[in-house]
Length: 143
Image 1 (cartoon, helix red, strand yellow):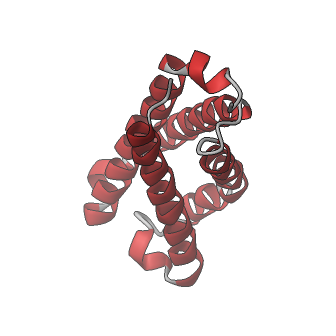
Image 2 (spheres, one colour):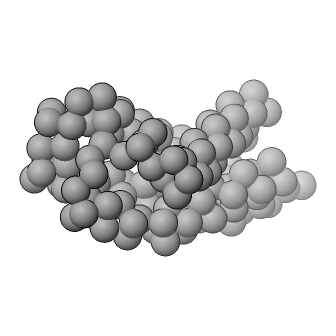
């Protein structure tokens, strides 16, 4: 059984994550200096490659947010796909940041990037862990 309090907490996390994702990409395309940790052309090109993958992650978060409170078994799929997508994005971003010294050589922007990376890791692992521990209940149709 997935209790209502737990569902509420996870929905809050999902909705906050969606808000952060929307805010980040809105700022990236309208006020890039607020979120960019570097202004090198290679960095901008790298970041510009992320909207499609982040869109997929957003679809997964929306799918989970819609199907979880309705107790649809497909919610487990959305959680697992979203958690996996988050870990993949984490890996891509961290590798680039390490290879190019983004965290330590970009001032406040590098620290923001590090925080985003750590939040992505914690969020993704947290979603996967929460959903996997409740997989039997999530796979049981609403009754």
